[in-house]
Amino acid sequence: MTVDALLACDCWDVVGILDDDSAKGGGKVLGVPVFDTARDFSKLVSELRAEGMAIGIGDNYVRDKKFRYVRAHGLKLVNVIHPSAHVSRFVTLGEGVTILAGATINPGTVIEDNVCVNTAASVDHDNYLEKNCHIFPNATLTGTVRVGQFVCVGSGAVVAPNLTLRKHAYVAAGAVVVKEVPEGVIVAGVPATEIGLQQKRPECADSLHPYR
Image (cartoon, rainbow, N blue to C red; front, side, top):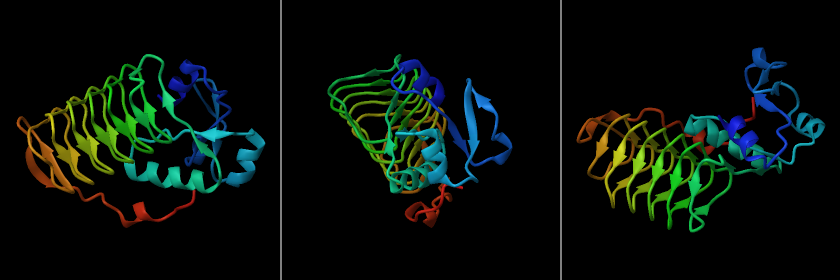
């Protein structure tokens, strides 16, 4: 999806895909060659003459590690915006943001670094998306919603106005959120209610791991 968006916007020459799965090295995705990251990262980037990199990973925690690793190597994290997405000129974007096909981002919204707004998601006016969160396909954030770090808003979920989804919270697919979601809580259903605690809150999200 990320490669497709980059190719569609014609903003960059996509010279390669880096993948931790050595079995995929030597293959292609949408005509773009795949390289195994077991090789020396700096040397590989130099050989590809890469000026920037986009993160094509859905998992918030893994994406965070890759983001910071790439930045530590001095590479620019590019914003990927599919040309069919609508992003108001009054939206503020951080670094390494991905906005996929058919998504809508309306005025007054702020999107911090390394956020993914997936296919056909709707982010209405004056929302605030903190770094490393992920808004899944067809999810809807109504006005003045704050989404905390590492939060996932599942496919087709709807979040009512003026609410906060606190850090590490998880909103299940199809849920309708009508009240604040506390830190680390998983909610599901209509209306959404707590069904558990998010266990995937690794300490490694706060440490730098190599790109392999």
